[in-house]
Length: 84
Image 1 (cartoon, one colour):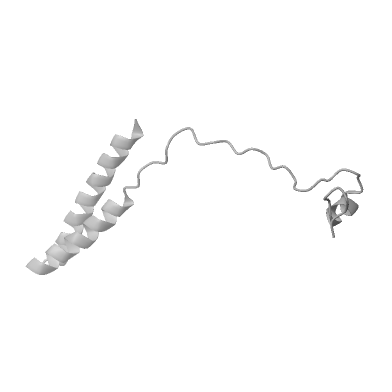
Image 2 (cartoon, helix red, strand yellow):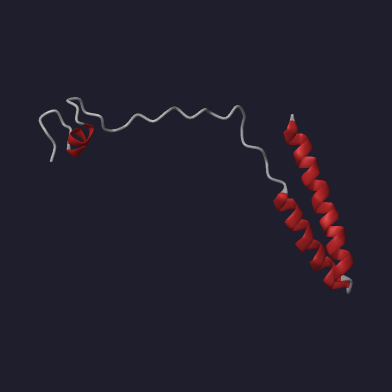
């Protein structure tokens, strides 16, 4: 139940005459730049693509390794481009 000044039960808890709710939150600092791009998707895509191609030619393990290397190379390129 709110009092005449608009304060409710929290006024009794705070034992003051002024309304202390809502509690002001400290300002959060804003990030200094945009979020970075994620290259992990490229690694996963390379792995899956490499396994698929490797399975089609009967060499799934080498396909997985080559696909992983290509995905890691693409992720490193994204990281270098986004690094600024």
